[in-house]
Amino acid sequence: MGVLSNKITRDELKAGDHIYSWRHAYIYAHHGIYVGDGKVIHFTRAAGQEIGTGTVLDHILFSSSPSHPLDNPCPRCGDQSRLDGVISSCIECFLSGGELYLFQYSVSPVLYIAKVRGGTCTLAASDPPNDVLHRAEFLLHNGFGVYHIFKNNCEDFAIYCKTGLLVITSVSVGRSGQAASIFAAATAIISSPLRFLTTSFSGLAAVGCGIYCVSRFVSDIGVRRDVTKVPVESLVANSRIDESEALSETATEVDKKD
Image (tube, rainbow, N blue to C red; front, top):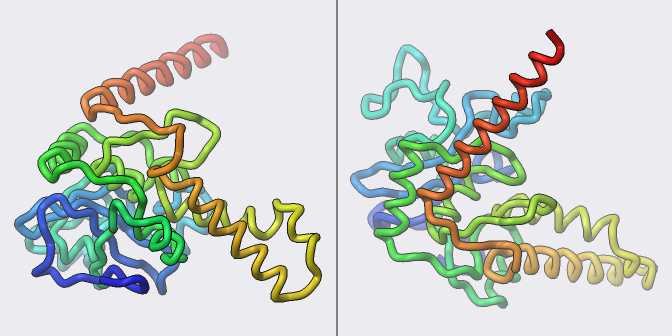
């Protein structure tokens, strides 16, 4: 591994590692937790629903679910193409033909900035492997809530398993470095008055790059102030309460209409 790539071999894998694989010409990466014995626990949506917008984009960015022809399913996993939520797959299905990369924790600020592409590392520290595996296994059986491309995606799942950290505010993006990069890029392009301080192309590029780097840095869970450590049992219990309240509100609205 180095500044330009986090690629590793399967021989280097250890239980509790946060791994990822790029999809569709490096458009986005799919993340999961390696739990040993060639198995990965990851959070996904069913085929054609990866970004969950309900638009044609859901069919452009195909599912991160393991995909095999229905008449030739994986001998270890079976047909998982229609599954969503937290699932367990063999590493071949998880990679889906892609390369294997290791997500880095406790990186220095300099290295973090040097990794221009989000979703590859964080300044936050990882918990011990036993804690990571406990969270992943618990969520495999109890779920990780509703998938959301910006606030609750596969990278958010893996980062939570590694750190136990959750975002406690409702106005910001989740823990995902990929999502933070999108917002940082948008901020660099349209949101800063500093772009009016220079008219040269090089000056605009320097200002935009600086804004992008700062925005990414302050969005990382290792420096954010709107995160807190939440035990996995409490996370699941609160999620079930929220779901019950939502169902109750829906039922009340239906009764009022009747």
